[in-house]
Length: 350
Image 1: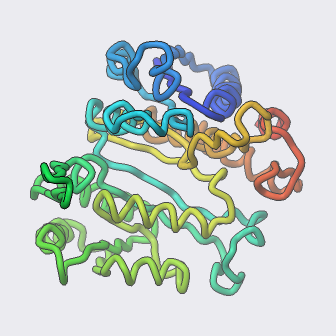
Image 2: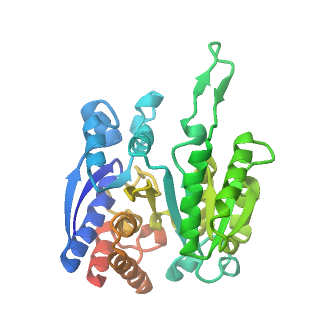
Image 3: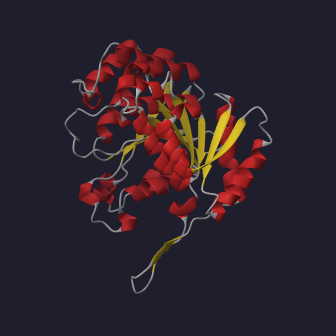
């Protein structure tokens, strides 16, 4: 198989963790007989420093022509003073909308060797906690109209959703549930928001096409509580954009380290952008101590979801598990291994 991958490492620890993940991708390429063509481009603050904008057209066009995108991280204190449209974080929204990536998959998995790293008691975590957050990515309040009154005394942000937008993300959640525990928890605030009432009505209609899947609705405030009180009750958690942003970060903390969690942003044809869920961590950038596993697992998600290479993806996951079972840890997990050292062990396990 030959595939082109646009690589946008970004800022902070982005270049370090992406570099390590590409070593793993190269190993898979050699072991399984594939060819991955890498096209590297600038994004975020790194692009602003060079081109004066955080998402240059060249970067977006390269991503559009590729078969998948691998992203590191964007942003940092250096760019905090930039006006809103110029901030590195805007590059993420530009990539998501420009590439039509409406579905964000964020697995929150407690790896058995890291169970004690979770801030929750072991009896609450249980055995094999595995939650998949399915977040709508291109609608809602983040993409609505943002206004500040002329006198500066008030502001408004519009949250809007259409039935087609809700239908397509709901279908992605139900399809995922069919391959997992066959349960979807749809999160909304239907007791207050009209968009949530439309959301709930539409999800109910989509559910009729998936009679094997159990559907429950939950208000977002209750979902936030249940994630720390009884996380085992969740399988697939379906949310709109802002709720998903918040709840997926909460779910990630249950696992013990944000440095372990990958994500995929997809569209209907399987094209996707893959990235670790953590930020650019400028405080440790350049020190070689960042945990690359979330980025390495993002590569595994790329192989699985965009390229259909399930065995290759599983081989990466098994290698990571093997290394963790050996007791190897980076600093965020209480260990002493560097970014490159943990990758070397994963490569050896592969």
